[in-house]
Length: 512
Image 1 (cartoon, one colour):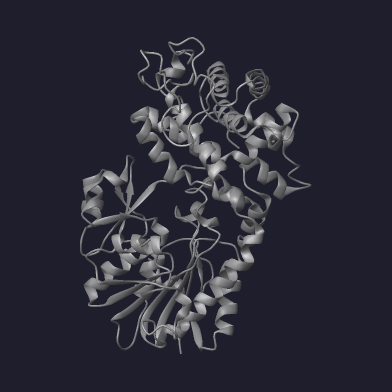
Image 2 (tube, rainbow, N blue to C red):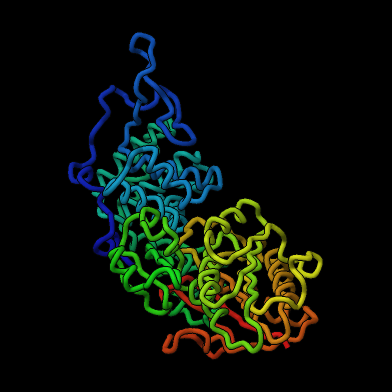
């Protein structure tokens, strides 16, 4: 368990503001919005109209921009079910934040969302009431303040005073309460709070890990099941889930060399995927290689499982490939680039119209035909005939428990009740994929989740019920030689703490 400091290189102090104690105040006495709360999206939500009746500049809240931007993002996640990776860039752009300010706002946003469970446990104790009974705007501001106190080098007085200023802006009348709660939080460091509040590691090891590493208990239990009860490995996985993940690029085969791309972007070639490049930092969307279609952003694990399908040995024709759940298009883009080198074509199926458009954008210029339809219609849709395709990918919708480090809000949104409808859909899609595959063809079933119900149970049940004879192929042989920690086969589970990838599951079947 780490203390209140972080690894070198992380943006933790927010720049010069913390060095000065962050005790600045707006020029206007009292600051804020003249009683108005911040707008839901963008802007400052209020204007000073006192200059001759003409609209003036927006009145800025009594808190610095990076903290306010982080508050807007966290509030949007909890209020509107927004996704941080989508809403935060818009907020940063609207507020004109770049460099260290943008990095600080990003650290506050993602760190607060990752640590939410532990922060709420501590805030409940400090406030003497359940956090769910605190007004939502004040609650989100307190979470940001507690994160600064317990996980960054921001001085305690700066974290408290800036959060009280934020509460003055978003939760009128609650400044005294916020000040008292945060001073209580500041009275102990993170290790002391966890020691005080977490269940006993002996009596309740799952509950202890859940509070210590800020994951819901049911997810910790699912990880433990998938890791054969090894709580040491579970601990390493939870720690990795709470780290800021690197950005991985995929150098599209035939369009970019990964070594040359790494030199171009100031990154490094990946450890396992022949197409992976690790990006050192910055905004990948600004890279020319992405704009001209030579590369795309894609976790190395996703590259490995897509490439495994293309790498499987095949007798007979090999020109018709199918991506049955293609949105948003990362794997379809890699398969399309591989297909272009081998004279094959990819049919990319996506049931969502919006995501189908994303697939079209991601595969522009590649031999990929996008179908906006339901992949389960194999045999009923003339464009998806049975026994027709040589290679089929099923990147099935899932809980996403394997990418919690990239989507920190997901761990708090997902519930065990999500599993039954998802696993039913997974079985139906895999059964459709088996029907779509010609005898001798290959099917790769992929999920970004290590939950055994979504992996081994789904594959076994779908293969049994599909009415199509198929045998497992040892997926380990389709991954780069020398990869550690691939288990006993025939399926493969990748892990953040073992491989530095998302927790991708891969099963490969050959239709008889």
